[in-house]
Length: 236
Image 1 (cartoon, one colour):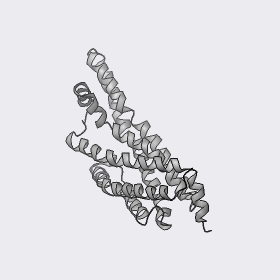
Image 2 (cartoon, rainbow, N blue to C red):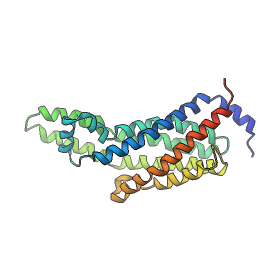
Image 3 (cartoon, helix red, strand yellow):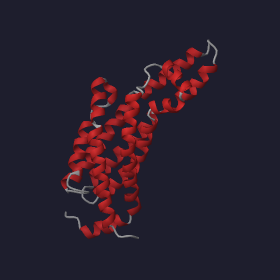
């Protein structure tokens, strides 16, 4: 069934603040991605619990950044983007839009859960510094558990759900030429490069780093698409 464009614009116009917020979200993520990449390359994350403890004692901020503080912010900022894409895609493919939104929101939730180490490792580091020799092995064991969860299945599922959401949203965006002619195609490419989680080994890490290139292009195209959409929506 064809979608009446005037009805669609009228319906989306009620959500103009959400579209505007999604545009801001995209800009924030685009700015944070190169910062995250630079931090990873200039200060590779430690490999052991004791190395993390030492890093937090020397530089707590760098410890938080090495444990994905900015990436956690990225994921949270993506929530308005998922909601805005749902609003854009829903009139054309309601089932796909709903599945994509659920996958995206669950991805964010699981990622935040998996990043418990970000602040907890800092707390353990402070305790370790003042602990007795008898207490320290238990603190190290707690830190090892945090790192296991940090790189474990919850994170992998979160990453794959993010890829799924990107692919599901991008298919109808490409098919119906929504938000611009190239947004859907680049989104499909971006989603395809995200199907290998970075925690599966060196290959996953390389693929995840390479996926940043189409991701940035896709986000820039989305920002332009949302800007054009805002100009077309009635001001309420």
